[in-house]
Image (cartoon, rainbow, N blue to C red):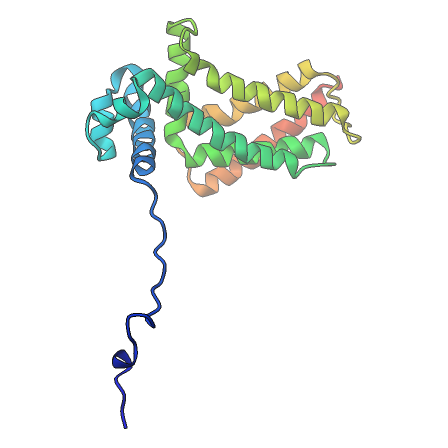
Amino acid sequence: MHYNPVSLLNDKQVMVQPELKPLRSAERSRAAILKAGEELFAELGPDGASLAEIGERAGVSRGLPSYLFSNKDKLYRAVLEEAATDLRSALSKVIESSEGSAPFEVLAKLTDCYIDYLAAHPSVIRLLQWNALENASRNGASSATHIPKQLFDEVLATLAKRILSGSHNGSGVRNSAEVYDVLLSVVSVCLYPFQVRQFEPAEIKRRKKHVRTLVMLLSRAEDE
């Protein structure tokens, strides 16, 4: 005798798989607007991009960016804050995982992480360039222009504490001013090449090796 499996199930016996709760529409829209804002602010600058264009790029109504973020300055700040949050998280993981490491190794791992981030986020590189221009033209009037510096200061404070209080401080770095000089040099050496051109994976590997060598020389030079 053959049975139809469907006929053996009644409404009470059918097991209904619970549906995954979808991301709320407002959250999806906000994420899309932030992504579109990052792209257009990078392409056109904070003054060149409009909220209506950002809404169109995001695939939402032209008025929704204004509704969610009030104005363009607040959206621009939100874009920079999100980029800073992503980079802060990546760098923090490196520092936390480097407990007990020599200063050179901590700096080398941080440079690797920073270079990987820059390679994966070309639009953020353009945002940093626009941010620097805006900071100069407006004399730092916009609070958003301070976000990159705030992140730098946070990393500097954490790194200085780790290096200067570590038992492996054989680098010759003796105070926070010297940590500042080394970190500023490393950031400049990592960032500027990506502002000029994009790199292939093999070239990125070579850049990491080159910057590691410079970090080693910088840390040793503090002894002289």
